Image 1: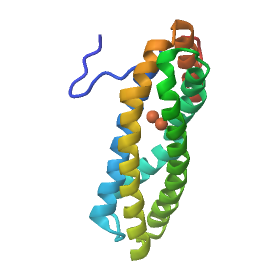
Image 2: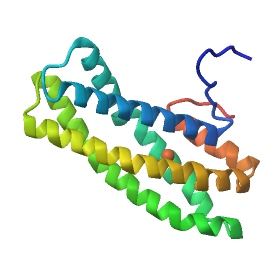
Image 3: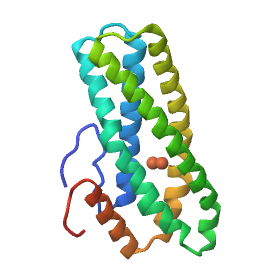
Image 4: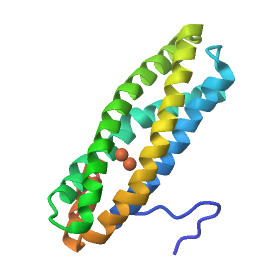
Length: 185
Ligand SMILES: [Fe+2]
Ligand SMILES: [Fe+2]
């Protein structure tokens, strides 16, 4: 058992729902980084620490976060929809709404990425663009808060309850493959 100081141990792909929870913590962390940097600098020149933080957070949302969406939309939600079990029915409507959130968040992330990159490239961001960036991020924080709460309190517990060992293994393998990791779990 590895010793972890100041952090919960990260789940591995043998516990796919655990990995999804860990991804949520990263989404929250990197979104708060973007909010903090945008608030602190307000379109003015970024210091070195702010540049690195902004660059890292933008890259996370561009490269890693979309895999989390694919995990849910391609590996978890279709298996729930295919189940004929009574306890799954209440979450199916939730899943439709969650997919709508994903589309909205994708569009918002694209705009945040464009504005954040423009800021990094030019060194400063015009006032109107900085205000738009702050407004976008505040809206996304509200959506993510509800979205993640629904997934963690309603959808994932049902998924954990109804998905059997073969599905759990397949989901873990699909998630590992999305991240370029091979080998059967
Ligand atoms: Fe989601
Ligand atoms: Fe999620």
